Length: 114
Image 1 (cartoon, helix red, strand yellow):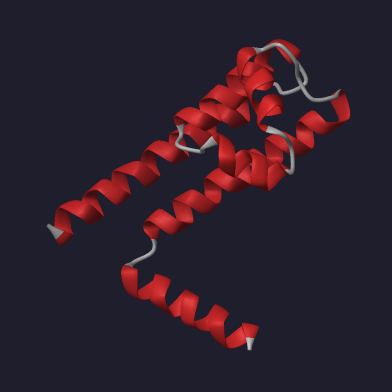
Image 2: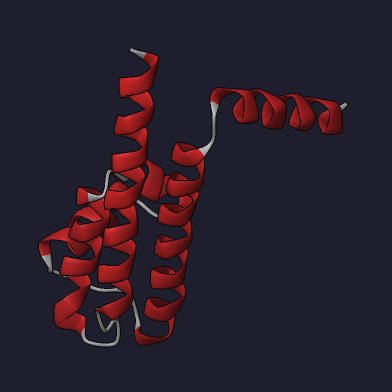
């Protein structure tokens, strides 16, 4: 079972990397692309609640972006897309870590917080 779980994690990381490559190619300056950018992020497994927490915005804002009803202002779009790519990259890193690496990271964080 351990082996199959590691294969699933590897495939999931590869899929998210494909989403990252796809998002990089979308032009965030075009308002018409904004709903597609947010929906692609959600398809990659990022939940609305995580977006709300990461971006400090309301659920209604995320929903309006997904629906294509609104988009962030022109100066915010590039920064938000960069943040989205960073979130996805963090997911890939977490998926590629072994359980031992995760425990070591948590242990190091605990030591730093003391």
